Image (cartoon, rainbow, N blue to C red; front, side, top):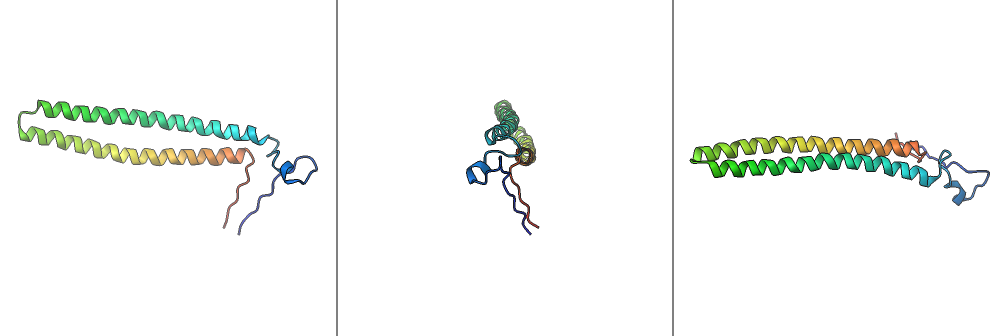
Length: 125
């Protein structure tokens, strides 16, 4: 079953152009600006988190290089690599979780923002 959304008409006019003039009393441009602001804020937060993540990746590689240059035996080098691989694997798992959370937050913001602007949403059962 699908639910059809009909545009809210402004005034008494039934022309297609006037149907798109208002969404629940807001100008479409104002509603879309709010959607864009919400999304921009979410993108900024995600960008900061990923930038910090890139820095931690650089730090990890630098630490590995420093440890390897200071090693005096093969067992020390292998231990350094083992610690590096363990930490890198943990970071990859964290990356997956962070990416999922970021996508989920963006999807929620988009859905919430669009519903707040009166953007027609349909669901099918």
